[in-house]
Length: 407
Image (tube, rainbow, N blue to C red; front, side, top):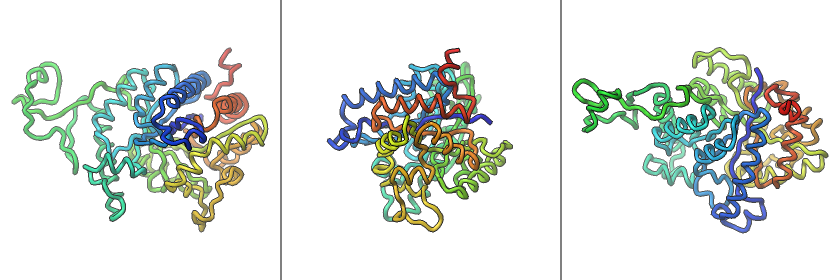
């Protein structure tokens, strides 16, 4: 198993000082600068064997953090400027989506990039937009009955995912579930003759029986699928049993070992026997600099989105150890390094940190958070150069330093 390294990008439109000026998500100057910097970043990793880039899906982000209301458009924008890197949403929040639109969008991206689309699927955590956009699906309120809210999201997620997979695997298909009947009964389809002569999904009486999504994915493949960020070990099993690679973010060793076992069990349920770590993903931060002091300064900037923004949604719970509460958490750079959510330091230090984690957590996919715009571009690109030249080649044959790439 050769580890594939990718970057998780929750697009931020500016550095902290610009965010605090207010409404940074609606500023053209900041958004255009972000597009230019991400273009440089994507074109850099395109040269050296990195696997992919995944954008969050979040709407209404007027504050300027996680400005990825159209992840598929970002995927296509950068996909058209690169040749090798895979792009996808990590992930589409399925409870608020029309599964036909998602299936067609990913397939279209896959055709336009000639097989470089990936896709992730999530249930959604940001109630401001999930509840607003999902209000007609019973998601307008997560306060009075949180259990019902969670169950409703799970139902829509599961059924929409089932429809998307059917759409990719079949020229035409039908479906009957709790929320969808495809196609509905008694459609008066005026194009029956053309469907009988040129298509499929209609019977001899002109009655519509099935529908299909166009285009098919590139060469009819199924894109590599992910579920970020699987937390509970049950989620690891469920994701793998549906053919999705779970992307874990926990840092406690015993928890990770349980997640690895559950992932294997899920893949066996799906029908694939995998080695430990195959079909398993993990997410971390990684900042490399010429000196330890410089790396920590850069990490302080790059992790602001986590320590300030994501922390408000409870993400920091993944750092907890048994018996700890959120009140016990220290989100300093030293603590994040010690809890192994952050690889940070000189190339030698980062190599030793990664080696320590990979000793018990083999993973096929390593997703690294990209602190775009929060970390000035020149520092981000220097960190990437050191990571590419002096760190990652020690852990995977897929990353090719510049001298090898040139040769």
